[in-house]
Amino acid sequence: MIIVTGATGKLGRRIVERLLERVPAERLGVSVRNPRKAQDLADRGVRVRQGSFDDPDSLMHAFEGAEQLLLVSLDRTGEECVSGHRAAVDAAVKAKVGRILYTSQMGAAHDSRFLACRDHARTEDLLRDCGLPWTALRNGFYAASALQFLESARHTGDIALPADGPVAWTGHDDLAEATTAIILDEGRFDGPTPPLTGPAALDFDTVAEIASQTTGRPFTRTLVPDDAFREQVLAHGAPAPIADLMLSIFGAARDGEFSTVDSTLAELIGREPVAFRTQLERAWAE
Image (cartoon, rainbow, N blue to C red; front, side):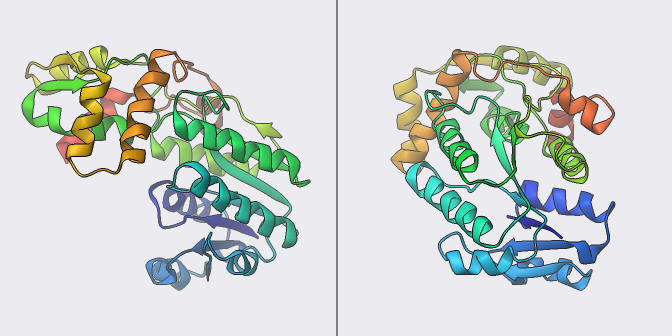
């Protein structure tokens, strides 16, 4: 039995779909906050159980019988994130899970300038100490994040963001394929994987060039001071922790934390990962 948490989210759902192409539905289970959102999976034979990271008993029930558990990282920050992951790891130990796989991130480190990477590092510590076999999927930075940053530029033609550095932007679909390959080749990686990255590391100056070539319209790149960017995010209604989280991405990029390009993702999926240019074209065509 393979159990996937967060199976109605962007990454978790893609992984479940890839697994369903490779293994019988009765071998798959999902742990979801709202089972109604996974009804279509239940209709296809997947075991659907309610599991809340704020209710450890529900997680134990959701993880029952798991030979492998894919723990998709929570969309939370700081202690709220790590405490939820701690509850899941503890429940996995009590449920006697065979192996935990966790969606970490390239650059995971206690001293990372990106706040989420600190949460990933603390979660990897929990896994290291839990006594179960584990794998941390060091995913490249999601290309979807870059596309969100570009949404206003798509209309204005001006990429107005803080100073950055090269980032190996990586697609959800490629990462879902790679995760499936790792799950089905159980034990291929013990501990952290190499960085699972897209084929190139790009800064937003280069992204502006790509956007111009893709659309045939001129795109400019304007540097926004960090403090001004934070105030803009706050003015749009984001809470301070989210503003700090978003700003920390650029500081980490300037320090080169996401600049590594590695061949492991390509080896896992058997082809070159989708380039950021292609992802931009697809997203903006929609």
